[in-house]
Image 1: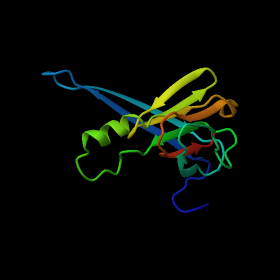
Image 2 (image 1 turned 135 degrees about the horizontal axis):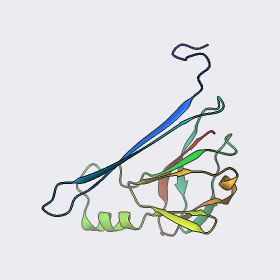
Image 3 (image 1 turned 90 degrees about the vertical axis):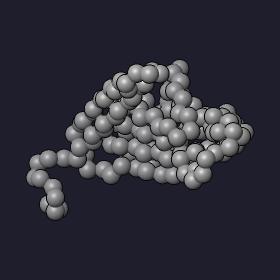
Image 4 (image 1 turned 90 degrees about the horizontal axis):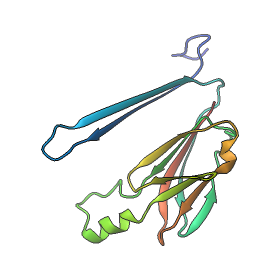
Length: 146
């Protein structure tokens, strides 16, 4: 048994998300959600930094995790701007949106945002990423085992 583990207890995946909304002149309204699940095996998460080519449709590769429980798509565009962006740079970022297709459903991941998908068994085969912009989009993909 490795240091820091408890015998008989497997890996655990925990997600905590906070969303704030503030109307003009009002205090912010917060919603928080929590998700917690025990992982049934000892596989390590699969993580990669990737690039979507302009005007492309791409199947999702989750490496050694053939049927992930959760997939996180993180649009990295605009995250590392160190100055105040110009109006042109802000406009360019609004076009760097990743579209996630799962069967007939569609989800958008704008620049600087992410989308987590808790997957039904077998649905990874239906997961596709689309870049409709004329620029490359840098993103990261993490797949967590069941």
